[in-house]
Length: 553
Image 1 (tube, rainbow, N blue to C red):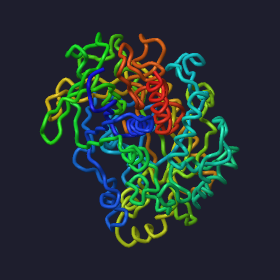
Image 2: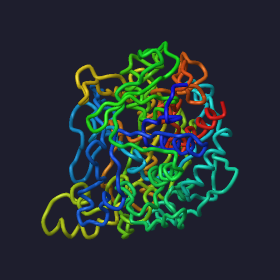
Image 3: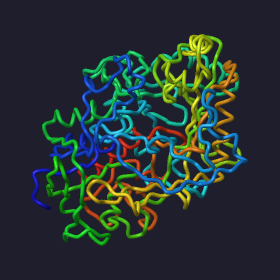
């Protein structure tokens, strides 16, 4: 092995990299954890206590949002006009004939904690039925790891995070209860539960890594509703206050923010698919380049930047043209309705309730791939007065003010997140024109909504509308989805795992095919996306399992 003061270098301090670093330290290894983004101070950077909290949003700092480019997106079909995004205040959102990119398109955070700083905190296990998509339905790929193998790791991580969850587990069997009692449902979610029940749909408490009681030096949640804006209290189990804090407390983890990975250097000093051993990495920090000897490299940069890093090195791990292929994105639809009854929908825990009724991959007649439903007013950024004034209440003046008084707190959203299946028109490559400050091509996303996805989106829209109507909504305020916009926080599949190296990039232990000391620990390894499950818990379970496997070798 190469002489180094570190047993392993982990690049990327989000869900997967943080979990891997923690487990390596727990097993006695010396670890260097790097991230291209900044560190955040929960007590200083998050502005939920400020009067301008709504305008502030998540406080992106310099370097915390990576650059991504997009290939031209598809023309929109007039026959799918019912899936166009719109709001009462602004009308049709995308007035072009092509699918557009919403905001940055790929919604993420670079930095210490990664996108867990910005996430809602849903803590979902993968539905076992979604892990055999190829053998059961002839699509995507089967997972080379079973639910039974992941279950003890799920349990360990839930205990470390302090996940609060229900007693009812449905398809996701458990060997022990959730470590914390479930959060109470908000008034708005109780209203949705009544509507779902009228339709014969179960409406459950959503498992969340926000503490329902004090744990491990962190306070219980105060139900302010601001999870996606950064949690100043640290009750949300983001990676910085859980895995990374514990890794650093071990004395075995050195942490470097604002450190950009420039090169991955193979054993013979050349990058290439034929190499079998990583010798070092080259990084830049504070304008200074540094070569870091690497006994074991774990890449955890996410499903966009991880394939980019491999492609920049001439295609490391890409002997069979699999790097960047099988790109899976967020497939979503949200309907927002207005109720006559004040429901204080701006309060409570975001996404506190969920329905798994359509989650199985065969749950929609004639469609492969399911979806989940959940309360979603907080994720839609419709909790403050500004959002209501711009999107929910048209006009201005005295009448506008009168309506605002009755509408704020009476809008309720139901969101659906569904399966994303690979298609040959969706992948990630290197942009031929645009480059980063170091002269390297940026990642470019190709995305295509195929016919099966359109059918699934239509089923999702029907379900969200039906629940709102059954719950008592008297008017529609806004609807939006991924048919006419690319807008993804969850992306997967670009370095997927598998047994056959001709169809995958890493093996079941997340080791890059053909290498003995190179692993990938992020959502790029997912063979399928699942029917709307949030991925962070599965990313972490896979990462901890991979560390256990590599340490035992």
